[in-house]
Amino acid sequence: MLDVRDLAFGIGARRIGAGVSFTLAPGETLAVLGGNGAGKTTLFRTLLGLLPVQGGMLAIDGEEVARLAPAKRARKLAYVPQQHSSAFGFSVLEAVLMGRAARIGVFARPGRGDYDVAYAALDTLGIGTLATRAINEVSGGERQLVMIARALAQAAPVLVLDEPTTSLDFGNRLRVLAEVDRLRARGMTILFSTHEPDQALAHADRALLLFDGRMLAFDSVERALTPENIERLYGTKVQLVKIDERSYACVPRC
Image (cartoon, rainbow, N blue to C red; front, side, top):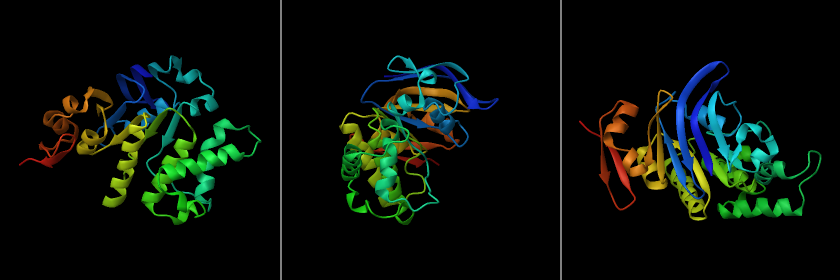
């Protein structure tokens, strides 16, 4: 369980957000929404222990994240950043193997078991054929799937994705979201940020809405993502059109 209580977060001496509280049970998916500068990425980096907590409490399975050694933290929380680029031509397999770093010794090399986990992660995402390709030569959508595979190779129970479909074309966006759904079905606990209310409604159980670093709402996606809340987040009048039981279209309202 991820337990966040009255969390204050920021970068250095600059406070970006405060008063954020929520719990996320094993197997739940949380979508975090907010306008540019609302604090989504800074919140995620704080949840991951990459930035210090400025106030409040943050714990996973009853242990404060700040007190966890980096390797132990990496065994509990896996991270997929917004965009990934590499100056080196690592192979896709090598990139995924990096997810095993927290589970092998500092000077140790990956063993057969680590390779098996990496290949399994690639196969889970349907990109096993890319294993020998250079990561800086695959498409943006494929690279995003590689980063998700790397996170899966960590074998952490919680997966954090920061705007996983940013800059992807329509087809690759659907591929990434389909994989998120498959991971949900396997029982992973997932947090992802998005600017798309319809993505949250279709692919998450709960939604956390951030407005100027503060919680506007935290509830089930249907109760949190009302037209009124969406309008406040983005300053645009909208209406939600229900397509089927789990799908909505969020469209401008004149």
